[in-house]
Length: 354
Image (tube, rainbow, N blue to C red; front, side):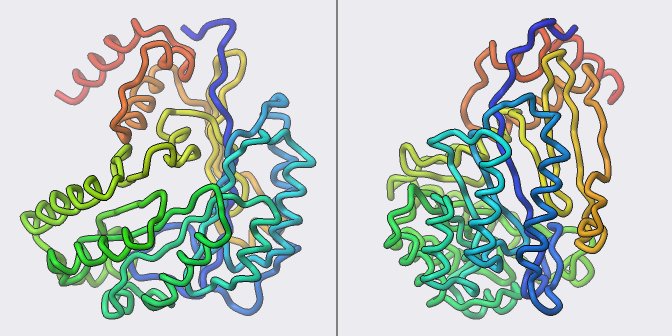
């Protein structure tokens, strides 16, 4: 049973910016092709109103990390980003050393805008490179080319940010082993403190889902992963999560909090949240997906309490994303349950599965 005095896990904040220049054929995230101009300040006002509605759930807790994802957050003006982060800091305590990450598309990167984001408080940028091959980028529906990707990384380096990440994909349509490794070599040459290296997966309700492209077979994918992992390790990157590598001290704190089963507020179109309360309850929230509905003030779409019987399963399914072990006391801190329930919970699930 939940403890009467639960030690609450760290709290993060996720902010969703839903618009993209165009929808990529592999993308199943909540993103919407932009029609007309971005409603910069209007959307920021709704984000802050959404946060206001969630504040009673936080109990005055301090936010340790912020992640601004999308969509393409770099479509938002630097002035709107300043207004957004100022508004967040005025409403909820934010740690002085908070990691504040923003995703950026190389095709929307400008030096002045990057500097403006930094002045607003962004100290970590995640750049969606995906590949350094013009042909592969075109097949992925990306709006940038290899040189724009390199320029974005160089701008991030020049700003002296706390860190920056390059997103790369492998297992791309008709991709050879050497092409995949060449992408990695070019990424490593840019010296990012963090690299996310994902295998392309075909998701339903995407263009690739309805018209799948030819992908490398399982043997080729294994060779790509094995040799790519060796390349990254030799370059000083340590794998700490299923698809994430970092130089020592540069792990993404926001994602670590997710996978450790920490708490997070989610504001913006389709954003998800998870909050633990002092009485041991854990509640998940989901916001309205479509910008039209969200910007009519209909923020909360769903909310449900995570049953005590489901918490062990959710805890471990998240922790299994990480290569680190889970300290025994963290199970109690993050679930509000005694570890004796683990055996009962898993036995019950196994019996149902048999």
